[in-house]
Image 1 (cartoon, rainbow, N blue to C red):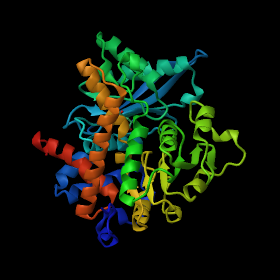
Image 2: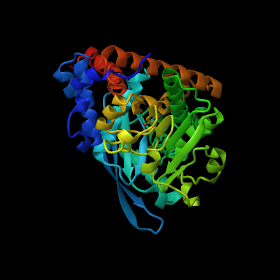
Image 3: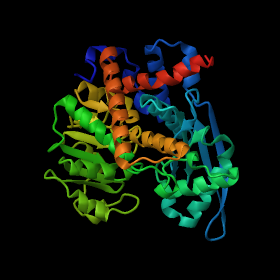
Image 4: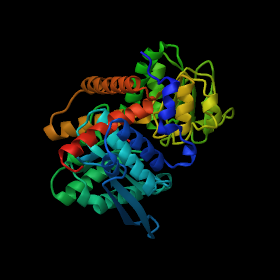
Length: 432
Ligand code: GLU
């Protein structure tokens, strides 16, 4: 089965418009939503409803720092559309967090939840801060302060947070504890990505990487590539990238390149992933231990069969897309490829697995965690892995079929599949 669109049909796509390189994440998301809504035959009202989050709350959180000074942090929680069910999505702690990005990411969560057929709409949160420069105590006070600030609009049947960039199970534990204290009853279902002893799910920590792995396997089948022996480059060595490197290494793939924020390592003979995992610090840095490093940009252009951008956005652009040598690009990060670059890769015959599909493993197992919390009955790791595989394979198939049937690239196909459920639910509810 051919998963990419023939080029003669691409002229009609909005993704071909000039100057899309200059659009920010939110604007480019709106462009694709518009195209998807039109392709599905909905009218302008539907686009008006879905082009922006339904609600975004901005909060200011005063925190006592360790040196006794007070610092006021800005945080956000964005809820895109709750027609399907409660909104769902992570909270990131990062200096670059901003309102536009949180809004775009909440729309993407609606799409992720929809293509995986979870009973959720999309939400996302963030705090402008640098956790790498904060103490444990400061992070705890900030996590608790954030929950107090947003407590009115979140909850197990309203909006369910989770980990994201630079947040982890410890932060989820503090947030769950704070919420349970405010409500005065134990509320494990308020948040996912918790430690196992507090109602976390088996397999949640590795879920994003597992989802990416399943997408790689499916894409490799379509391209007739054997994962065993395939050369793979992974940009980013954080939660997704490092577990993925391990899974690929264990599956017999040759991980020829990895990178972190400081630089990249490339070895055509394959890297010793176990050694690198062992030496990596808690923020995913390892290349600083080496002298023969190359840049992240150089890494993306190196020879490989499968390229996985698992770091930050806007890494593959019209400037370097022509130089990409991989046959398959699987977007484990959010928004690593610009719209122009999406077209260039598609024209080159590269199978691009878009971010909202490739990175959907995390929220899928978050849903399993929430279900287990609600029923008070917990599953084995095998059960979680098996259910996750079904969900991701189904989503992959539906998107490939939509891509072929409508002769659109995989990104637009994913948006078409993703926008349909919130659109239908909104229509049944009589909102449009
Ligand atoms: N932050 C992850 C994502 O962007 C997970 C969200 C969740 O588990 O709810 O998909």
